[in-house]
Amino acid sequence: MGGSRRAGGASRGGIVTPDDPTWSRVDRYLESELVQPDDALHDNLVASAAAGLPSIQVSAPQGKFLELLARAIGARRILEIGTLGGYSATWLARGLPPDGWLLSLELVSRYAEVARGNLARAGVTDRVEIRVGPALASLAEISKRGEGPFDLVFIDADKPNNPGYVRWAVQLTRPGSWLVIDNVVRGGRVADPTDPDPNVRGTREAVAWIAAETRLEATALQTVGGKGYDGFLLARVRTPA
Ligand code: SAH
Ligand code: DHB
Ligand code: MG
Image: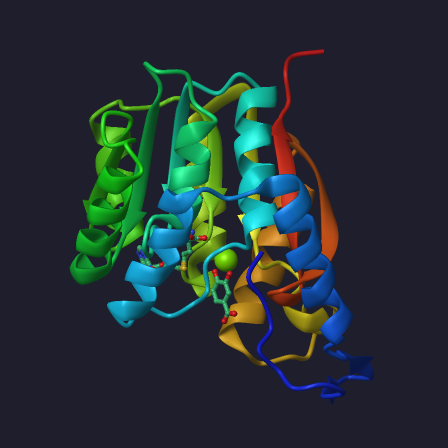
């Protein structure tokens, strides 16, 4: 979720990405009317901004979507790749039962510290663990320790590593588990096979791998909102026929 910071009308390969102020206005309306993030979530954004973290977390409506998804599938164990200030982690943790577990992976220890403070203020530290380091190394360690399977994996870190992350996600889940990948549209750039941006290439390679992986069935939805024009991919690990 998050999204393209590109100014209106920029185009590559004939793809036009206008940034319509209506998207933010409607997000503000939906957020105030329907989603109603509480003080802890509001304070998370304030503390993260004050600490100088980039403002690239999911929007409140997207966060609520993650919470609802976790609850819909009855998730008890969630793996998140890309913690930042723990904003999406807070939403996901709220979708867990009291004895559930969210393991969130973050490269930057300073971000993880900010996230730990935010998660404590949100009252979800009993359910959330943050591990610092390059996620590919953390994922190998999780596998070695046999800490899977996870019911839901939310992939939202460095996009060039998305092919590696989806491979690990399949390793660390079970039939019937779910995967969500953020930022798969990137202002429309994902549809351009000639785009040299490593973020776009990483996402396209992950999408192609998922398409060829018979253990997965998937779709992706384009989104607009306060974070611009982007989208997310939803995949399910198939159960035996
Ligand atoms: N999921 C968060 C936003 C994550 S932003 C939310 O919506 O609230 C992406 C995060 O991935 C950043 O915090 C960045 O530091 C982290 N990241 C980048 N490369 C990484 C890597 N190799 N391993 C783990 N985390 C990484
Ligand atoms: C951006 C947005 C995201 O949601 C993310 O995970 C990474 C980057 C961005 O807007 O640049
Ligand atoms: Mg994102």
